[in-house]
Every structure is written in structure tokens, then in C-alpha cells.
Amino acid sequence: MSRRIIIVTAVHAPSAPFLSDAYKSICEQELPEGWEWHWLVQEDGQTDRVAPYVPQDERVTFRQGRPGGPGVARMMAMAHADGDYVKVLDADDQLAPGVLARDLAALEADASIGWATSRVLDLLPDGSTVGFPGDPEPGAIERGEVLEHWKANDFRAQVHPATLFVRRDLLLALGGWMALPASEDTGLLMALDATSRGWFSAEVGLLYRKWPGQATSQPSHTEAAEREARMAVVQARAERLAELGWRYPAG
Image (cartoon, rainbow, N blue to C red):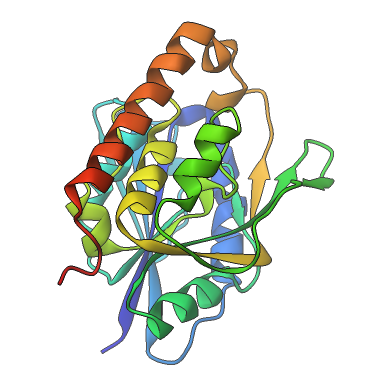
């Protein structure tokens, strides 16, 4: 019986037209023998505007739920995540070729690695791509490294949370994505960093679409008071986890 990688995607109506590109990028992934992927697409809401864009594929499961933001939608999808690993994929983004196999290889090779990330390229509206400066060295990331960099660099991490590939049991043990607007994935990344070693691949793993409808492009995302509050609670959670001394793997 094959082992599974669960790809979790939260989607709302404005981003639904991008699902076809996301699906194509998933289908182009090549996995080692004995592995398969299953895509869980969870609508953040209950409309009739998303389902028409969901591919008809037995490897794709579509569900709906009351609106609560992408973190809530992803957590509802986790109720059906029957795999060893979870890969995050936003509805408007695309996986780069080979990323699932690279992430999988890193975590299968070392039981002390709880999560993996990879290099990102911005995908601009004209189809061109732009990279980010300041990627870390490829390889293992020790506990606490991401948090310290994040605090020292205006709350900007050296790895991108939209590329997370994580052990399912670790994700659930930490409570998953935080209940924060447009920073739920940063909150998860910092909690992972506080409790387990990570991995960074220098090969491109994600095309991160830039478009007017994305949450992080809205003026409210950079409003000073709210941003300060979001970052404060992300930091507090990570620091309390580190102080408690729980480590993955336990023992």
C-alpha cells in the first residue's frame, strides 16, 4: 500500500480560477515508488463559485465549510489528512518541479528533521519571476534559527512559510495554523522552529503568485498596530514553546 503526502489548499471564490494552475503543478510532481499524493481542497465558505474550478480527479477531495480564513479552512481539511506528511499549497500558487520528492527525501533521511522549506520565486502578473535575496545556506536549520533571524529583521523570516512540508503528527501536536489574519502560516513556522530542526532546499520549490486579490497585498496587512499585535503573539507562542523544552522527536 502506498504512503501518502497530503497537499492542503484553502480556497475562496476570488482565488478559485487559479486552481487549474496549482493542479497542473501537482500533477507534474514525480514521487519515489511507493508514494502518492492526495490533494485536499477546502473552501473557506459555502458558495457555488469554487466547485466548477476543482479538477475531477480521484486524487482530489473538495469540501466546504463556514468561513473563518485560510487557517481555519486548512485545519478543517486536516480532519481528512490521512498521510504521513502535509504540504501547504495556496490556491493561487504553484509547486516547482521536483519539490515534493526533495522535501520527502530530506525528512525520510533524518528523523530529527520535522519540516522543510525551499526557495521561492515571485510569479508576477506578466508571467515573469523574481527571486528573493538572503536565502539561508541549504541544509539543516537548527531550532531557534528562524525565530532569531525573524526578530532581528523586522519580522521577516529567511525561509517562506508558504513552502512548508511538515510531518503530520508534528503539525497536529502544535495545534496547526494560528488564528491570525494573514499570518497564520508564519505562526506555524515559528512554532515548528521552536520545537524541531528544519530543512531548506536552495532549489526553487514554489512560484508565489502576486496579484491584487491576495491577502498580503491588502493595505490592512501592513497597518502598524495590527501587524505589531500579530507579530507579538507569534513571538510569544514560539518563545513559550522553547521555554517549555518540548522537542520533536520526543525522548
